[in-house]
Each structure stands twice: as C-alpha cells, then as structure tokens.
Length: 216
Image 1 (cartoon, rainbow, N blue to C red):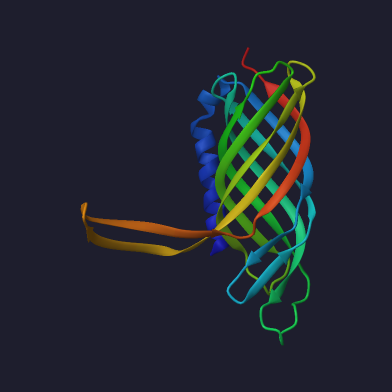
Image 2: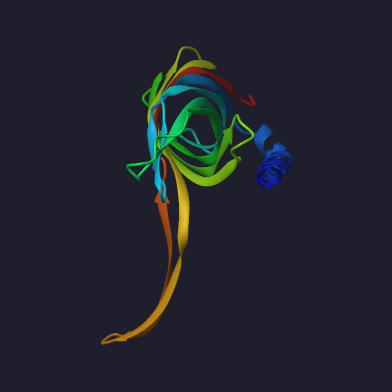
C-alpha cells in the first residue's frame, strides 16, 4: 500500500513539472548535487525507542528562481543507515540491528542575501519521508515531514559554484484530531486541533557543486 502511495506522489511531482515546463524554461535554474553526513536520532515510540545511527547522505536539488534572491526548490535526499529497537521494559532485550534507508522528497522555498560571490541563505521545505527497511520482516513507512536549514553559496564563476548547508530534519507523526466547543464570558465558540509530534529529530550537513542555467 505504501509503495502505491510513493509511486502516486512521484507521479504527481512529474506531472507538475511537465505542466510547468514552459514557465521554468523562462527562469534561471540551479542544479545542485550534494554529499554529506546525517546525524543519529531517536524516535520515541509507544513501547520503546528506535535508535538510528550516523550515516552518509546524498541527493540533489533543483531550484527555480522567482527573483534574484528567492527560489522555489525541489529536493531529494537519501541516507543508508541502520538502527535498533530499545524497549522500555527492563526484561526485554534490544532488537538486532537492521539496515534501512531514509528518503526525503520535499518542495520548499529558499531566500538568499546578495553579497556578491558569497550568498548566505535560509530554507524551509515540506514533503514526505519514506523509511525503507532492507529486510522483508519490516514494512516501508511514509511520513509527512518538514525541513529547515541554512547555508552559503560560493560562486566561482557566473554559472559554477559550491553550496554548503546544514538542516534539521523533522518527520512528523499525527497523533489525532481534537474538536470541542465552549461558552465563556466572551461568548461561545468551537475549535479543533491537529496533534503531531516529531520523530525522529535529526541534523545533517552537506555540500556539493551547484550549476546555474540562465535563459539568456
């Protein structure tokens, strides 16, 4: 079921890119391939902790310029790592170490500061995280996720540069939805809340070559 959802999400992204191709070709594009390091994290579950080890990460980003300093960005990042389950119950031993990959597919915005050849920037993005175990015993899991980060672009020429970045990765678990009504001194009213928690919370640092493609 998760595999079908993943394929549908990727297909929707491809359709959006295809529909917008005429607009994109009139804009400045930036293509970035990167390699880095993803820090360990712990996911607090109902009956124990899932502990994830440090591991390399890699991927790519495609940015479309909205102005000279603002961009819309599509990114993919993968990390092949391993982890184990550490139960809360004292009499139950930790599980065996198992291998899996984390896959972040996200769309967001990038805002940079024009300082000539060096450009500091900040990013925020939303999308999906796909946890893909490399064993048939465990199932693939897909979560909504958010990412915030910042970094620097160093332009060596008008079209070639180096990009370095640090980010916080925040997959989210939806715990439920609450709705209620009340009457007070200010009158009556109703409202709802969506309850979420971040699990796991990880950092990453990466860098790579960036290529600028301008229509002119």
